[in-house]
Image 1 (cartoon, one colour):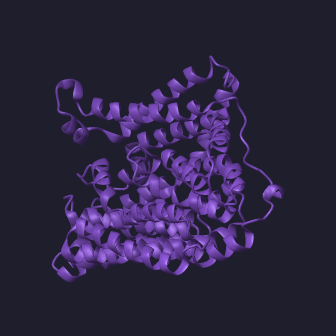
Image 2: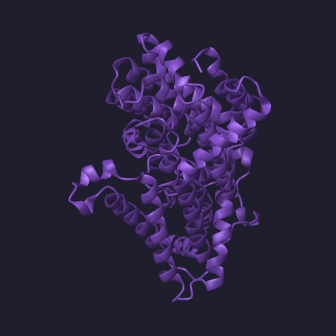
Image 3: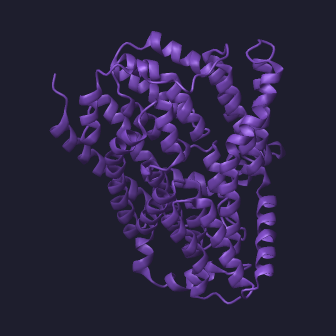
Length: 494
């Protein structure tokens, strides 16, 4: 099929429906079917057959990603059920002596649990509520700390469910290694890096502004004991039962990457990482982490054998939404690939000779991703749609502009997800903190939008200069200026 402007229709339909309905599953499916109809000349039965042929090929080609997500979900369920997170909370209550310490302990736990944002939100909230309550940190501030160390840390962590999703979002025809591309986006992921830096500064300076400041002043001395605790975990686990499975997961995944990259055949470490099969490595690493967790928990009666096995189905259920989004995003990418509609061929022919448009791409993709993720409440669906388009624009070579534009997609997706009232992570952060959801959204939004503005100008500067270093430097300088202004205006007075 010759690539024409009509090839843009499927992703446009998916994006438009997502913005209108705020529901990503049906929007992606309708976008897929519209593309199949275009490809088959509007033959309904053939279009449906084509859709499921592409879906089957995509799921089959990415089955290791699905397996990894299920294994990760099981591990998350096991650690939660063991009571290890509760043990961390009890240790923190005894060890922390000041307000700043409570904030930093909360953020540290969030940064440590980087393998999955769902696990992060509920675990951190459940564990740290007693600690933050003790030092009069409001539930809205707790919810912000949780949210700011969930998706932002997961999107820059190489061993996480997010890394697997990003790496598998590339078009099937692409020769770029998805894991290698993800690693290269980390220093250009402005929203994640600036959010984490801003959070650390807020906690160190003990400063708030906007709705958060008003909420802190109005609710600082509230008696929070009446709020229901709905995410209590049991078990006899210790802090080590939280730390060791995660450490082993990381170590085993890294070791598996070296193994699949040919380290045993005499290949160098750097070359082994470059040549590894990331999806296979993640499956191997998570499998051996589960074996380790079994050996760690069962002989010590942390969990019974039946409780251990119950976590299999619980972990699978927790990952069903993520797997469904990925399946649909993969299928839409397949419909738009060179084997079918060839959206890449059309988009590349339009922009490859237009220097001005090319320079603006990182900033433009950042804004589109932000708006789409805000409307749909999902990061994964957003970059599943946009990353293949970015690859189509800049070609199948990992250039600086491609890496920066993909990083902008990830940044915008996380930012939009961060401020969306219908985002699963935003909702889970509210639930984990036992905070009124609207209070969380309204107090968090000015913080997130401030960082979004800094990111936009950073990507604008980076696109104009063609340098990711410039993008990060501009964002960092603007962040310093913003913190100085905030300190001058809102610094706490004794």
